[in-house]
Amino acid sequence: MGLDGAYKQLDPLEHREAPAPKRPHGAALFAILSILFLLTFLVLLHLRLRGDAGSACDDSCRIVLVESIPEGMTLATSNPSTFEAWLELLTAATRSVDIASFYWTLTNEDTRTHEPSAAQGERILAELLRLPRRGVAVRVAVSAPSAKAPLDDLEALERSGAAVRAVDLPRLTGGVLHTKFWLVDGVHLYVGSANMDWRSLTQVKELGVAIYNCSCLAKDLAKIFEAYWALGVPDASIPAPWPDNYSTAINLETPMELELNDTAAAVYFSSSPPPLCAAGRTRDLDALLAVIDGAEVFVDVAVMSYLASTEFSRPERFWPAIDDRLRRAVVERGVRVRVMAGCWRHSRAAMFPFLRSLAAVGDNRTRYDVEVRLFLVPSSTAQSRIPFARVNHNKFMVTDKAAYVGTSNWSGDYFERTAGSALVVAQPGAGSGTFRERLQAVFERDWSSRFSVDIADTESWGSRCGPR
Image 1: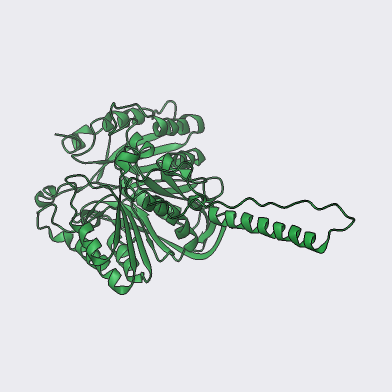
Image 2: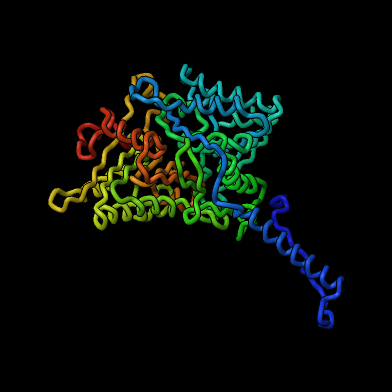
């Protein structure tokens, strides 16, 4: 199966030159005008395919921060839960739901813990299974499952009438499809850290965004989904270059200008890894570094995993791209940097020396302002038995200029081999309740909470973080 006719060719335009009279004959004039009309049409068609029809959006876009706060953890929030946002999106769906996902385990079958908090995930799956009967087309692009991956949800989705494609990124790029986003009816979307996993709703701390009534942004994110979808056929290969209909003009250089909650913003989506970026698409690493470079006062980072190396590729490689850029912001521009990493039993041992090294840049004599903390999610005895749970899974950054909400951890493999995406929102002006300020408020709440400990306080976290 090809890429749905994405490559199209036009026959060359040929015409003969007539002898040059003082005035063109009627037929010649008609031919000239026809050629000009056709050329104009082709240019406009090309611009439309690239998304260049305009960098402004007239939609009344509404953006909402959504969170998953693990059960038994007290953190004040006025933000809707991930479960509430997903349920609202499914209820609103009338035509289509497209989901890009890493894996699926919305029921409790994989853990065999009979955990009551799986009920929210089971409700989401039940609603998804009903959609085809309501006439809603469902498409799921998922990372090619490993031998041990649960398949029950995906098989149930296919039986319900949903279309499922497994993207073999291990073969194509050496990574996985780690992206987590939804598209509903071509006008609503979700992007964030939450996997299609019941634990992401009740047992893992997550953060994402839901955007409503925003066809211009949904249309652009859909191009990333269509790339995944095209690569989900047997023996697919990555086009080089990607056809024009995957391209975009909404990027770091020319973001979409729109109103988010009645406040001016400049917005774009980035993607990784580079081979999956069509023309015009900003690479995720470039977007992340640009947000750091644009900061004048502060950079606040909340991410589960932070390493100045690769995590999964072998041999392990030093990969200082992000770490260097944060240090440069501190030293060259006097920017305050705070990094809050996740801490759980699966944390890589190498993460902690890298974090200590970054924290060591902070110095009263030089006035380099750097702080590093770890965020620990508490667990009861029963909760501690739930596998791969009880961690701060957030992947966001906020500065005095912009907000970045992504799907990738901060180490080399995620930006070089693994499929991820991020939303970048520039809102430099201060204003009551802007999206950037709301994200900053979440960071401040977590940073100052009793669940956050200084990286130097090994006694508080040493027995809880990393392999035993």
